[in-house]
Image (cartoon, rainbow, N blue to C red):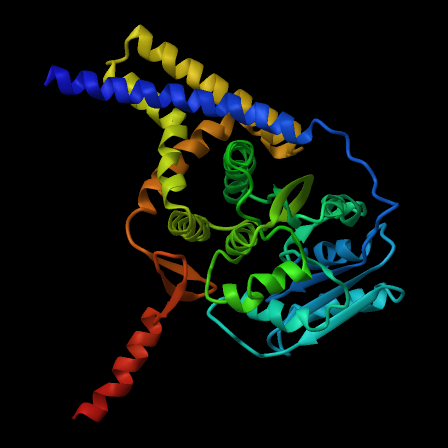
Length: 400
């Protein structure tokens, strides 16, 4: 029994040390990305088509969408798209068209669906109206500054670059969305920065994917990712497989989110976690070595509250918070990470529980529908509970 206890202590201590290494490495990797001052590319401004797929609307939709029309850039167009003519997301688009009469703006309404991921179907429909060879895809809840296009197109001066992508910080409203935002800037993006330095970028983010049209064609277009939930990850992975580079820009966009609910938070984190698990199984399992807050707490318990246990916990938590503040607040400019840094350990504990949970099962709920995730990350539609009950009710009389 004592041997087992000692083995558990050793494993927990090793996890604490590996997590500390990860925290410190994330600081170095953040410095490596942001150490160069941004430069303007005024001498090389390729024209750009911005594709904005929309479904639904919220109170801050206008400001987010309009920010893409306020670019200090020579030639660009913005193409908005919906699948349904009755989509409320068209209302802010109509206002934007009126408020920016000089801008090259198009609104596309097309119900064509090519796969289970409706956003990708939307992108395919609006791409047909894109004029230029550099395409910028960005989710509808992303907000940017006027220098956005100028900054993200710079890497395309290298002809081997196929995709440029951006990290994001959340403008959160409410404690639930705050906790999710803290996880993004102080944990998730810390992992992205370390992966970039150690393995290179092999994925992209829906917050921004700037892609050459020839690269999109080379990987099979939007049809190639139409059945994947993690369409952004797949697009980056396919570009790398085709021999192109994916560049992580030092430009950080804003992700605008509403107050949210605990139920919504749980569903989103479960969907995100399970999607990452099937997309990068080894990397996702390896996240256990970054769970320093939980490991140090368990180590303290295993050491029965000894002096050494408290030292390990104190050192691990202090370095974790320090790294979160430096990466999240310092480099990513997340004001909430600076203000609520003391919540980082709590967010990590919650994140650990959710991480464990995502290993159980392979179903997700997305926009009111249930799906099963295959090993490769494809979506298989499942009947919702309501749909199943309706089918049973319909089939009952017929069976008599």
